Length: 59
View 1 (cartoon, rainbow, N blue to C red):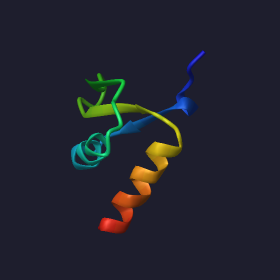
View 2: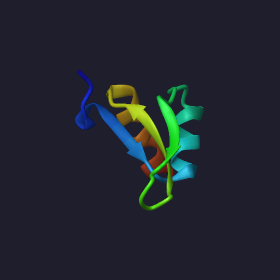
View 3: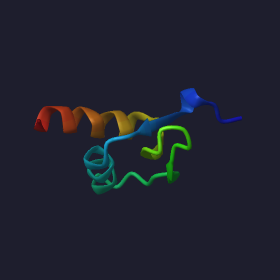
């Protein structure tokens, strides 16, 4: 069973584009019904963490 701890909710479009550019596929992109903010879901894993670390270093 997949739970919230298994997925990364990304609400920043620039970060989502960067992660995808690193070759990590998203599960879905959707709009949160209450806030109407768009988000992208990614499966958590070492490759995602490496991409996020790389993004932080580039800023």
